[in-house]
Image 1 (cartoon, rainbow, N blue to C red):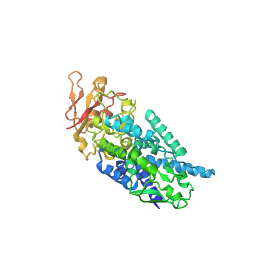
Image 2: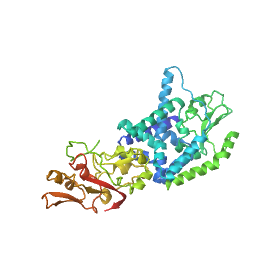
Image 3: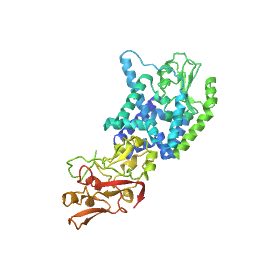
Image 4: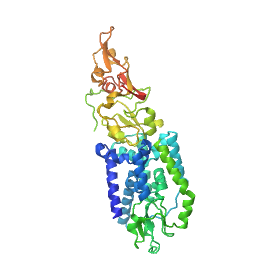
Length: 460
């Protein structure tokens, strides 16, 4: 029964997060992303962090087998491999492997250092939720380039490892390692009753995290993800999931606790403290030549990000905002400094004032929630006119497209004495940097009016 309940809960989270990542259900599935551990830490979401910590202290690392989409993805791969193995008449077996402390804890230190020193590339690569987000994004909205290659390599590596060795990633995952610091003290655990154990070793052979040493009748609770497979497979009913606090531990468990217990717990507290510090293109003129990305003095970051520094220091490149953007404004960056993190561009659409999709779904605090209509009061950039590219000067024709579509009236058309035509001028105090003018400018391949981002957003 426990295993069935766990599978049902895992299916709800996995399907929900997957739908969210492909752009479905932002209004009613956003909570599944906000319960992801590392994004919650970066966002300073104390409620989510407390919930996951308490959940782990009570039930063990059940987060890894229910809430984490990459963990559930590995379970799906393992289930397929086991089904194929049965059809071929050869069952897939696992075997106990000792904990790789020399890999686990250095990775935690690396990700803590990345948070402290704002090295987002490392966080992007090691966060399991973000890795799954890139995989889904690349599968459902293929984009060729470095981002797609990284997502493909991640998919092949995780799937291959799961098929051959089980949940090997969960044994070294920095998020799983941090949770293991609390999971080893969980109130409820699978416990082996030595008086009932008949030595069949089925629990060890079926343990996908390779954490059960059936010869010594011990379980490494730092790696157990509470999948309950061992309880189902035990032929002698010697394994039960029960209250285990205060019971005598085997000598080996005591030795391990003496060696890492207090230090590990303090490490977990330190980690939490450190961490907490479809496309719409209406109105566009039919393009003769595709628009090219213009040079910008400063990058543009979405409304709600507050500043470029806040955005890039919190973003884990999960691609959720990219998938949710209905106007094609957000896409993954390919430059090394902000690799795979979203970048804004107005070549395919503009940031509509009524749209708050990215701020609605962001789980990390990189894009803070905006109320309806609030975007009209936030300036993320300033438009700049290049009169050499403007069709009014270049072709001596009337235009005014940028002025007509500016939602805040920041662009006025002023008549020139030389030609008698009206050319655009920008009131920088009113401009919000939405990109409507840049997107709808008929100049090709570079728009005559482009937006430069503000380092810190301004209220207008």
